[in-house]
Amino acid sequence: MDGIARFAAHVADTPFEALSPAAVAAAKTFLLDSLGVGLVGSVGPYAAELVALNGGEAAAVGSARVLGQQARPVPAPGAAFCNAYQIHNSEFDCVHEAAVVHPMAVMLGAILAQLDRSGGQASGRELLAAIALGVDVAAGIGVASKAGLRFFRPATAGGFGATLAVGRLMSFDAQGLTDAAGIAYSQMGGTMQAHTEGSPVLAMQVGFNARNAITACDMAAAGIAGPQNVLEGPFGYFPLFEGAYDLAPVLESLGRTWRIAEVAHKPFPSGRATHGLVDAALQLQRELGFAAADVTAVTAAVPPLTHRLIGRPVKDDMAVGYARLCGQYAVASALMGGGLGIADFAPAALADADRLDLARRVSIAADANPDPNALSPVTVTVRRTDGSEHARTLTAIYGNPANPMTRAAHLAKFRTNARAAARPLADEAIAALIALLDDLDRQPSTQPLLALIHGERP
Image (cartoon, rainbow, N blue to C red):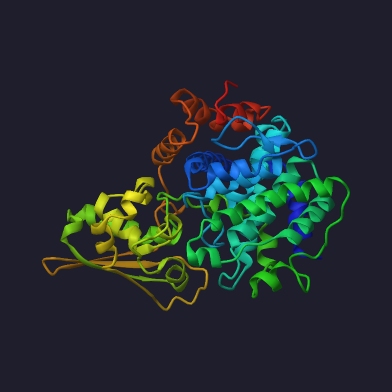
């Protein structure tokens, strides 16, 4: 039996009541977090243009609104694409570190489109279950991979999680989910080339797979059968996209290990691989009280994957997508401002000569970590103008469940992002949305949630 059948049975047959309290709490937390980053993503590069491009006739597939954008609906597959793009385009969305997967971006983009085109008929419990089970799929596939990234795993593994989560909301049985996964796999794509170049298409790859999830579920609902052995067949996902893998322990853990409870917050709007460097540098700065002008050099020793992801040259003309994945720029910006936020990737910041000069004095080297998917530990050393050197090693990066953001910090991030959307949420709506998410497992419908995120009264 192919592993996809085991995942499909898990998603189809697991009741909400089987979820652990930690899984339910994490699903609420990262639903709110992902809504916030999707809202602020509505002002990201190309967001408005992509909404316009995805307009058109919606009769056959249903229509849905785009998070943080105009009230006019677009066809549901296009809404899924735009939602997912916005959730990932500022590199602010949560991540499962061991899987190297952003499990909410593809999935929530598609889920929001499905909920909206169906009028919010799903209950809060059904939504939370779909999220937790979809993360089990996306993160489980990532955890099973034992090779380095070749394809963009947040988009590909995320596409499987999104498809099965949407199918769960459409009441598919295990066979229907397997068919939908096969159809989604037949459309799947997304490579690391866009990441290497810092291209805006990187986040669009997340969107492509969200759009495909809606299309795959619609095709399965119409009775179209997909290929069945899409994970472990001779041309299945693992042999073709990943290489070395070990799926058996992941499948055995289903129903006992809830991957949503292993997900990490992203406290900074930059590649997760930059966060250990940023946090270590900020810790040293806060403890020792030095200014950016007092720094002559910063060195960082990081796992090979971290170096591959964010150890890239500083450029005078960096695009925002490239800068978010440049560890040197992230560290320099954090030291100059005492933190790292959306404004640090605005055009004025990207052109700041002092910032770029400091960034060029940051060096990143790969250590001998043998794990091809490790993002930690990292060691950062700051050299000051007085000749002193100060080092900090981090094993659990800020935002990881072992070093979590506080609820206050999580809510502050959400409020800031929701206020910065293309159609900002009012403070009253923000407060109501937080309260509703806290009580989501007792909500008979998700219509009030949809109303609030789209600026309406529930």
